[in-house]
Structure formats: C-alpha cells, structure tokens
Image (cartoon, rainbow, N blue to C red; front, side, top):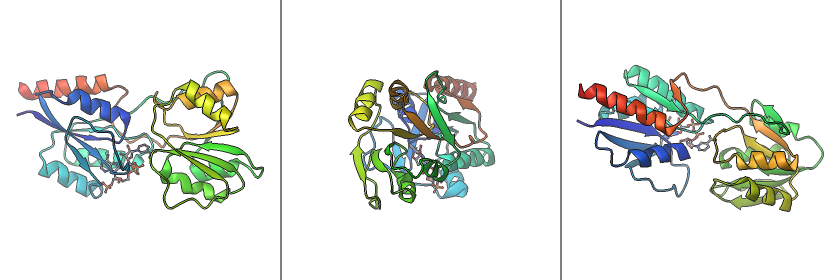
Length: 252
Ligand code: NAP
C-alpha cells in the first residue's frame, strides 16, 4: 500500500513539494489549501480546500482518509494551522514534519525595525505622513486604517475586501516572486519611503528586502510568530528524504 500523505500547504514550497511527489508510486499525497486565494496556481496532486474545523476536524480527516503522515508546509505566519497540525498528529500518533523556510538574515546596510505585531508596527510609522509600501497580504491590510495620515501602496494577490477606509491608498495586484531590480524600480518610481513586510523568510519575496537595502530605505517588519513544536526542515529535498525513509520503513 502506498504511503498516504497529507500536505498542509498555501506556500510556494508546498506547491514545489506537491509537484515533486506527483508520479511517485511509493506514495499517495493530497495538498490541503485554506481556500483564501481565488485562483491558486494548479498543482499536479489532488487538492482539497477549506478549513477542517480545528484540531478535532483535522483528526477526523486524518482518521477518515487513512492518512499515514503529515507535512506542515504552511506559511511561517499561519500559526494556527501549524499548531493544529502538531496537536492532531500527536493525538493520532502520526509522523509529522514541518517544512519551514529559512528566516532572512540581516546584512550590512539593512535598516530593519522589527515589531511583535501589526498594530505596534502601524503606530510606529508615526504622525508625519509617509509614502508606505505595504506587502503583508490582504488579510491584515485593514490594520492600516488606524493610520490614515500616510500615503499607501498596497500589493496583494487578490483585491482587499471590504475596501479600505483610507484617503490615500493605491493598490497593486501581483503574485511573486519579484526580483530585486524590479522591486527597486517599483519603489523608486512610486517614491516609497518605508517598506512594510512580514519577516517571512525564504527567497520568493526577498527581492524587496534587497531593494530596500540598495535604496537605503527603512524596512518595518512584523516578527515571525513562535513556530509550532514540530520537527523542522528547510528544504523540499529534506521532506522527500524523510518520506523515502518512512516508506522504506513501511516496506520492511
Ligand atoms: P491560520 O491563521 O494558521 O489558519 C486559520 C485557519 O484556516 C485554520 O485554523 C484552518 O481552519 C484554516 N487553514 C489554514 N491553512 C489551511 C490549510 N493549508 N488547509 C486547510 N485549512 C487551513 O492561517 P492563515 O494565516 O489564515 O493562512 C491561511 C493559508 O494561507 C495557509 O495555508 C497559509 O500557508 C497561507 N498563507 C498565509 C500567509 C500569512 O501571512 N498568514 C501568507 C501566505 C500564505 P480550521 O481550523 O477550520 O481547520
């Protein structure tokens, strides 16, 4: 019997893993997405959409579908689903692995200001109107309504709904990855003074961080939430090696 894998996704890494596993006859894998993005990029594995209904719902899904192993490949800021994955795997005595992208490392010339949450970051933008480039995703964009004095450029994959109650906001719909040169041109062209981002890590959205360094712009970062208590790897290759080991153990 092939190993039955559930991948909790919603990231480029999960998509890459899914594409690598498609066609591997040692296992059967399903990618789970929360369903936030209206047009997710297609992958070569079966996909299920929507929440499970907390830890209990995830446990039920695992039991009902005969899942043998869980890979938590969600975004570093998606703290709830990772914690739920950890709790459900423990309760169901399931092998589990977290695929978590490497954090960004500060380089010389980086002017980073880190905040524990978005409200404290927004308040730190200060009373003087600034031109702010916001790249935290649409789910938390409404947090900027508490600082209507700034001139904003928001970038997100899908439109922000309901519309933001801000007098000076411009919207860019785009999906990464974005290279540093393109990011530099964008920031320079729009007269950006501050970049706001989540300290997500990884390579796909690092271009803006490099661009800000080259332009000597301050970067206001929301710090990563504490990671769920799970064994962790950084690369898709490491997940594949782990799965190969599991499937070999099973074959014995
Ligand atoms: P979250 O706060 O950790 O999760 C909220 C709820 O959404 C979870 O309790 C779960 O509902 C459902 N959920 C989340 N990921 C799921 C998945 N892969 N499959 C099925 N249900 C899922 O997560 P979030 O911040 O809303 O992020 C949602 C998704 O977007 C994640 O898959 C994440 O990887 C991706 N994403 C998030 C960010 C970010 O900055 N937060 C950025 C890029 C991509 P139930 O409790 O009902 O199971």
